[in-house]
Amino acid sequence: MADETPPSGKKRGIVALTVVATLGSLLFGYDTGVISGALPYMYMPAGAGGLELTPLEEGAIGGVLTIGAAFGALIGGRLSDKFGRRHNIIMLAILFIIGALGNTFSPNVWIMYIFRLILGLAVGGASATVPVFLAESAPKRIRGSIVAVDQLMIVTGQLLAFSMNAAINSAHGGPQLTVKADPTGAIAPGTYEWDSLNELVAQQVGNDQSAIHEFMMQMTISAGNGSAWRWMIVLCTLPAVFLWIGMHLMPESSRWHIIQKQVYEAIGTLKRVRDPEKDGPIEDEINEMIEARKRQVAEKKLSLSEIMRIPWLRKLLAVGIFLAIVNQTTGVNTIMYYAPKVLSFAGMGTSAAITAQVANGVMSVIGSALGLLLIGRFRRRQLLIFDVTGVGICLLAIAAFFQFTIAPAINDGGVPPSWAPYAVLGMMGVFMLIVQSTNGTVVWTMLGEMFPANARGVMNGFAVFCMWITNAIITWTFPKMMDTLGGGITYTIYGVMNLVIAVVLFKIMPETSKRSLEEIEEHMQKIYS
Image (cartoon, rainbow, N blue to C red; front, side, top):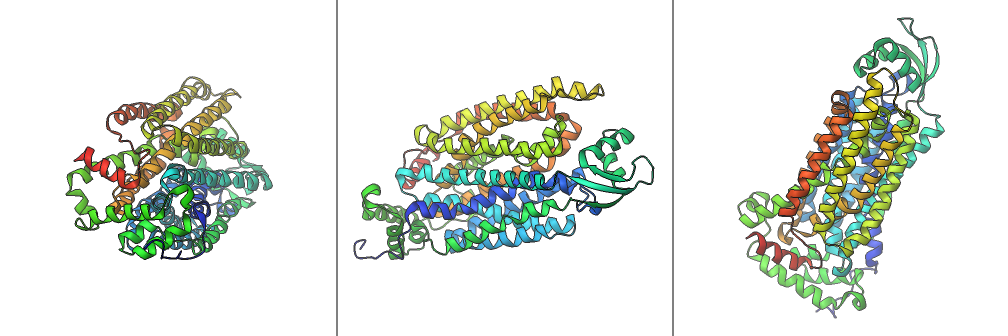
């Protein structure tokens, strides 16, 4: 049968398929990372082109996207099971374009919330669909590395966002605005840098962010460059267009065809992305898929409610959910979304903090590239347990800088030492190197491979849904935690949490390396039954 069935189209190769599919992950990274540089401009008054954000609205800007991403992951997993992984990614490209354009042209924060939600649906759908598509399409010999490329593209997207933020910020000369009049008479008319104006207002009302915001809003602002954030966001439409075009040229997952009982289509698809000399006979792989599918026929494709009634699947899902949550409780997105804010708390200027965020992006990319090597040489358990231990130590170090150096200086009415924000930035860099070379690579790889084929989309989608809900909670609460608890206590909480998680992982985390997807399924059923 395999010899007689022709390829379903032109040969693409697994590398070409990976590059195109992971444009969805690059968009995931860009859309989550771009907000870190856009927020300082959004804080500016409407007269200067900003959105007049408050700290609460700042958390909502990030939180609404992550809520959308949670439901996007949940719905996207089901749709990819029903209509196919490739079809789902094509639809997500359209959502990315709509969401980006809607965000760019939002006249106020309430309209932006709507399009941030749409963008979140696309981000969540990509986070649930792309790893599964790659895991099902990649040959066993390089599956871990191929899925790890997905993580590399996420952080590459974030680095691209940070770099574009820095370039656009530099082109605008940093946030600036022109004060036409101040009813209190405290601020003279003229053009100010945003940081300088904040310092002048703080001298009048103190360091309370709400009071500063209220004072700013009562002034008459005649001009400014606050609309720079729109340029940062609109750029992500370009890779979305390339994703839409590219996925039309790629084949569907052969394993999805087998689930749909489309054997000839599966053979034709597999021939487009396999090299028999390196990957072995196509007949053997197809037979392995068919045998696995035969075992699943009696069980049928499972819904979430049915999964919850099967003890071993329920346990497996619980472990998957825990791993997904661990991906967020590292606190990685407190740096991805809010590093400029954290560095500003530590004493760094806004423009310098936006530029400094590029360093975190570079360390993320280096870490993810290193992860491509590590995941092939070490076991999944070893890497993830090392990760949460290492990041816990890094977060406690950041907490110590805030608690014993930065906070005392501010409380005494002075400014933190000039080296303090750079010490925090350096520890952030080490943190990003560790977390991106281990956590993201391991978790996304395992979520794409640890669930059985007849429930993979639903279980992966629900686990990623829980990941995004955790992300939303962290994103929404972190700015308020920094404002009320300070950097010392906030980062101590995250540091201790990760050290506790390391102990839990040691006890419950399964191993999936060096096994085919079908072998993983048998192994999971054995250990959780």
